Length: 312
Image 1: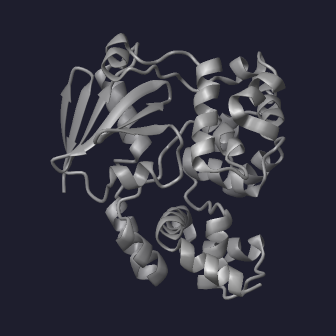
Image 2: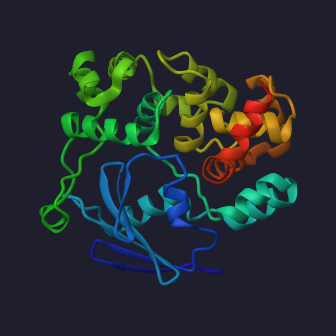
């Protein structure tokens, strides 16, 4: 199906988008700055306030920022962020042929795209996510943005929706703060990692743009060399902001799926899980992971917990 665009003043409608589900994509745990308001989703993407809605089999997006993008930049941002130029239907078909468990996960929640997030925001967001729950992660990020970020919502938006939205704080803004001020936003023990990372990026000790251009294994090691970044956070940053679709983040849910549904070994190591996933899914590992994570967390939670308990 060929996509057709209608471009208006700060508005974009895209018709004929294949293999795309807005709700599944925005609520599957890969991004933490989208809020459902009525039938639409509001989110701040790379400093631009978007209101996105799936309506009449089309994607409709509006720019509600104080400083609005020009039409070309607006279209480019939406297409890049949501991965709309990719043949995602072919990816889903390939994964379904390759693996019956992933096929079940895709049938459960089809159309999940991997979002192309800002690397800095993605890195800090997943540092906050360590040993944390999604509502807590979201509230901490909101407070950080309110305290250290710049206002992005227009007067019209604030009058219409009764709230103000902020851009994600820059590394320099966070480095001008303190561990205590970041901790007061709900970051808890993670505050020292966030502050340290902000100082590192501000002083040039870490270059995320350079890391994004490195080969996968080298980029993974570069990220893991940073203060407070372990394997899972590194894989998330590679997958959700650097377009490395061979990445395969392993959290509690994916660990359960791999140990009990694939490997049949309750004591399988993270290395074994990674090796299996890379061999089975190759350059589509990240997409398989996202479908499996969403399916495991929302449809198979009780079943997987029972398997885990019975293995002890």
